[in-house]
Image 1 (cartoon, helix red, strand yellow):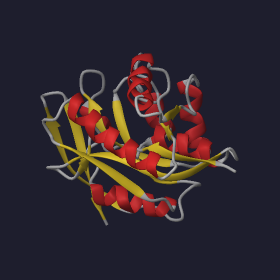
Image 2 (image 1 turned 120 degrees about the horizontal axis):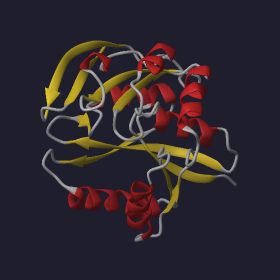
Image 3 (image 1 turned 90 degrees about the vertical axis):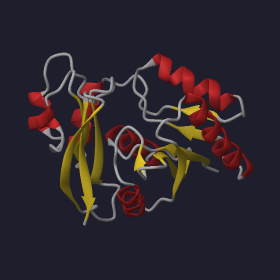
Image 4 (image 1 turned 180 degrees about the horizontal axis):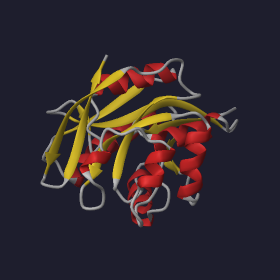
Length: 222
């Protein structure tokens, strides 16, 4: 019998590729997606994507979406408490594994494993150690489509936000910028691809600079 897994969900390309890997592995059954949402804004933390779009994305993927709400000024302790409550709920349902789309940041993986293992939840990292250049090309070759929702202006120009994640964008990335944005250079929203029953329609809205560093592009549900 396949092991049930919850996928920690960002709505972006790495989460989507982790889902692709899990969906193709007969050892696992993805039971649902778990997203962290900023309560005051009703948006995905870090990525800035509206909760409504996340729900439409999950519906297009044919999966349930669960949410962990945190306050806009909440720190790691609040996040940890919220995640532990979610973990306890999944364990009570007999779901003992949570997957992540992390690629190579050891400290991030250790942080996740230490907090999950406190309650006995197993961490899965289906993309771990893969070359990011190859992963970026595989994402495009498989037919997934994504748009950049946030960029760190310390490493990327503001004109990158709102752009399609495609071969041209990869060619335009400055030297040293990870093609998967694993070091936080950019975040994305996947709206179509082989796992989707249908594309998630949206339009590009306002572009906004926050913390004098991060440019966000608001994606408007259609």
